[in-house]
Image (cartoon, rainbow, N blue to C red):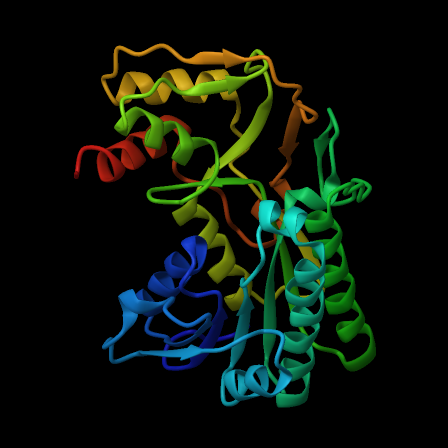
Length: 304
């Protein structure tokens, strides 16, 4: 078990959407935090007495080694996301694969107690089945493949050097000011007076999970006694794209109706079981979808 209070933890990507929630939850539990991110990120924590913001690049092993020095645990969350990975696959290889290896190598060499790795449901690919952690890994995107590589490297570091770790496969995360994804794109269009667009008939369904719940699972994975395990992190609340769009319009009190685009949608369902996390980590999502969407609307639209 890794004690949080009074110890320093590294959060790579701590200035990002999910990362900053992890930082806030660590601080709330008395931990000190070092954020390692690209220059200009993590600004919201500048001046906080328990936070050190270190600008750097995952692709440079010497910078990663400096960031890992003197920490009890590492949350590896920095990533080149899905769309940029598709547009620049070589950069995806350098950041998500080589960069992850750099983090794991530095953690092992520094004697870090545990690494928590943020993976993604993309590792499963497209399937109509509800995925548990034993589901075959069928990624057909460069991003998904890079996450599989990161998972495999970390498992190898455990098998070869005994490095404790937990891997988390996040489902469809959402929250205020996300900057990408379905919820954010719908609210941006509503704010600009444009009707939201739904590709296909909107029957595609996902496991939507609120960002603070994801952060809680991530912190819990660090402090738990569990190691050498992989967990899905989702709410178990499956909703269609159509449901989400109409709920956002209602909560935003918008009279607009969505426009349906005649665009082929390759993925029709991605839903995972998070029962293993409930059983071994004692974690369950607490924010129902409608309540979470109401929070997003309140912060992103009504606070303008």
